[in-house]
Image (tube, rainbow, N blue to C red):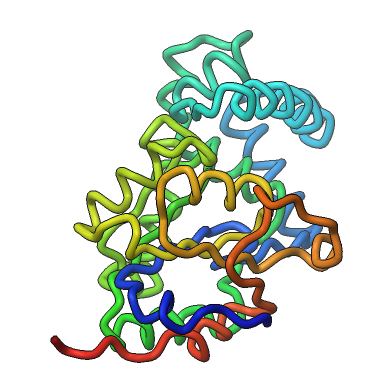
Length: 251
């Protein structure tokens, strides 16, 4: 963890977190993934082998992601399935199944678990007086809110901005600006904690956030960064935030 200007830290009032590879970690457990592939095939009603069927979905999903990245937009679940992933199936039926299909498709990638110390970090930052929020690029509309409710964490987040609901993806500045508006905190007093040096730093800076922290994947830790990719702080684990942000003093 590198050092950062203490005066900048004192001015921060809200902390926004990414979800994937930040607040939750993906574990590629094959039995879990296989069960999800079987469930997708069952939902759709295909007689095709589940593994080959989902492999084709993965191929189509990569095409969708390229389009989404280039345009900085996110399709709704219904549009994702009827336009991109299963356009060769009856649209009305696939649209009605879009939520469970999205959930199982994400499960086919692996099982997601809260990062070590993640829940404790969230609760402690909330107790210290910070407004908390989520800003995440995801294709699911309900999985994140449902998970927060199930784990008893929803009460700690004032703003939950998901690209699948908002329609725009990071690094588009609008998703950050809307998150800050919902949190009722000036952007210059907002922190963003993400995992991607390029996307997360660019979007946060363009939105005028006061501070950007990156918790990178192991393979990205030693990459050479341009000034546009350089965050204010790099951390190793989510619990490091507790060493950075002290309780907010009552004015």
